Amino acid sequence: MEIVRRVHSMKEIADRARGRGLRIGFVPTMGSLHEGHLTLIRKTDELADVVVVSSFVNPAQFGPGEDFERYPRDPTGDADLCVAEGVDYLFAPDPENLYPPGPRTFVEVEGLSARLEGASRPGHFRGVTTIVSKLLQVVRPHVVTFGAKDAQQAIVVKRMVVDLMFDVEVLVLPTVRDDDGLALSSRNRYLSPEQRTAAQAIPRALEAARQRVTEGGATPEEVVAAARAPIEAQELLQIDYLELVDGETLEPVETLDGEALLVLAVDCGETRLLDNTTVRP
Image 1 (tube, rainbow, N blue to C red):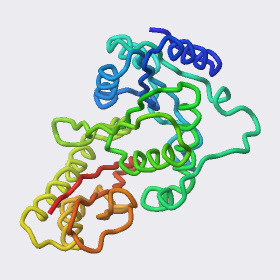
Image 2 (image 1 turned 30 degrees about the vertical axis):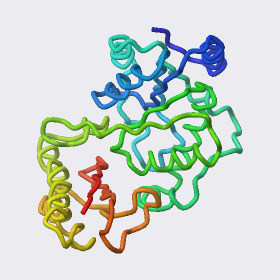
Image 3 (image 1 turned 180 degrees about the horizontal axis):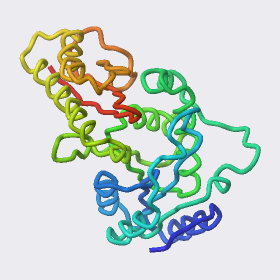
């Protein structure tokens, strides 16, 4: 495996691969890799001839007072995992390489970026879509893979790819969970044992919502209430948002007559936990 530090080097590698007719698969990450990332890498390896993983903690998607400085970083461990998974290139640029001094251009998906996580973290998705667009320009993949845990991120990125006519397939894979049901996340390592136990109420909440829908005749309000109950029973958890929304527009559903997305963000101490599930009547 080759570790690539500079944008022009990664572009040259991508151009050579495409020139040889090879299919490039790309997994963008912020590093601190876990089994969820490895699942994306393995699927990408099935679909592509050349696998590129990026590891870049993107400063543009962190707001004031957020955890940019303390976000988990493990470059050596990430490289070892990529080698073990047969990754061809690990793209790990320095921030100034992707954000030269004086940037004036940003990418923003209006509407979809303003709700839910975007309302709680203004500017977050502008940072996400800007860095993803830069990475797609540099790596030039045929397919790029994301995890479903960050559902709104995947929806926003897919909209951006369509609107800006990127020639890339966006593949969203199911959330990978730990044995206790908690969605895998690099931020989970922030949790104390007591917080980790409390956080297990989140997958129980998703199951409660699915069960309420299965019983039949549920209104969106009743599904949301079923999901809120297990979380609100935990003193260490604070719900930021918990909504039942349309899986494309992210607008609240008024009636449960088709597939909908239950999406939530919960604060556990200083750790922000995101999760979601699809429900079908």
